[in-house]
Length: 192
Image 1 (cartoon, one colour):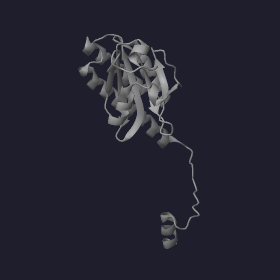
Image 2 (cartoon, one colour):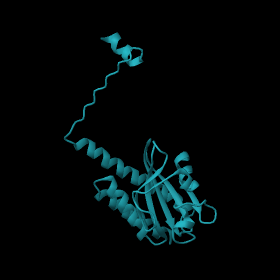
Image 3 (cartoon, helix red, strand yellow):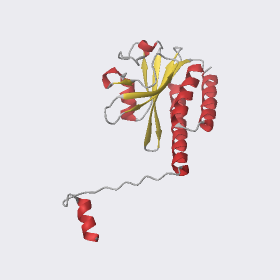
Image 4 (cartoon, one colour):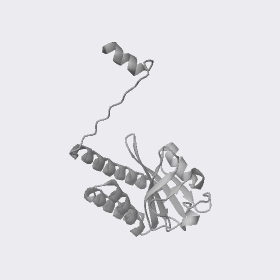
C-alpha cells in the first residue's frame, strides 16, 4: 500500500515537473496531485518571508487553507519552524501538535509532514502534506517525501534557470555611494 501510494505520487510529480513552465503552476499541480493521492488528504506549498517571518502559502489543495494566505510564527505548527531551522522533514500528529490553522487537528488529518523544498543552498519554500489515514506519513514515507521535496526544488530551479537564460531583457542597476569612508568607495578611489 505504501509503495503504491509513493510510486504513484513520484511518477505524477515527475510528469508535472517535466510539463510545467513556471513555479506557480508546479506548486498548484503538486498540491492537487497530493490531494488526489489515496492516503493523503491534501497539502500546501509556502515560503517563509525573510522580511516578516510569516509563512506565505502560494498553493494549497484538499485542505481548508487558501493560496495567498499568510500565517504568523505563532499560528504555525512547530513542525514548520523546525523544518526551516533544521532543513529536514518534520512531522506532527493531531494529538501532539499545537493549535493554529495549519495544525493537523484543525485541518482534519491525523498527521502533518513538513518537507523543505531546497536545491543546494537555494530554498524554494516548504511542502506540507496531511495524511488521511493514521498509518500514512510514517518514517518510511518521510524519506520518500524528502526526495519529493528535492524533486520539486530541482524542477523549480530548472524553470528559474531556463527563464533567466532565455530572457530577452536586461536590467542594469547603477549604484552611487557618496560615503568616502565606505570600503568599496576606498577601493574605487585607489584604482581610479
